[in-house]
Length: 114
Length: 119
Figure (cartoon, rainbow over the protein chains, first blue to last red):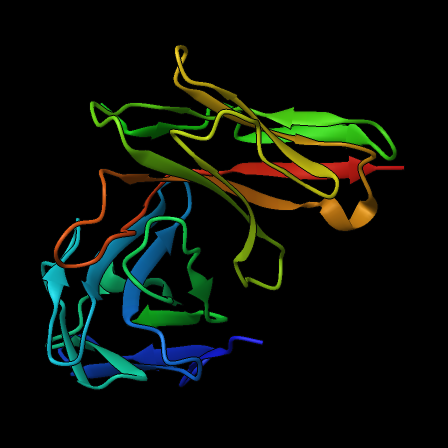
């Protein structure tokens, strides 16, 4: 079974802190994604990566950055956390660039910024 | 305009009945794909079913089927013989365009439909 793990289920940070959210997949997938999920808005794509050291902006990249130094690991970074970044963050991975490959999701990290 | 529209924020269905969750999409691409995911209260997203724009037959996976009407740009999920465990949030998502440089299956999600199965 594909497994996507995220470093924390719940996280509480203060405004202005630098926050790292880690995601690891164990199935040698090429693509990795970071989404945020907010009530009434569904999932919105923040960043994605299709290869090591490669990254592409999604629909809402402002206030975030990412890092992919190894194929299995994709990190989301909040350089200076703000209260409007309080949300559920979901990481996903998929096998390759072919369109029919579904994305596999991690359990999510619920981040609260005070 | 939203690319994926799910107009039913909440739905109720009796156990063992069938239920249809609506999804309409907007794209000018000829090649695209449509996905349905289930999110139980525990939070994990579970892939249910996929339909490619060139697939002539409606996709089916067990009790799930996708009613794909290309001309109407709709991709409704049909769950037959509902079970209590089907209570969850359901998301429709779309991948636009053919394989692209830089990630072939970036998805756009709808806002979801909360389904509650009752005894």
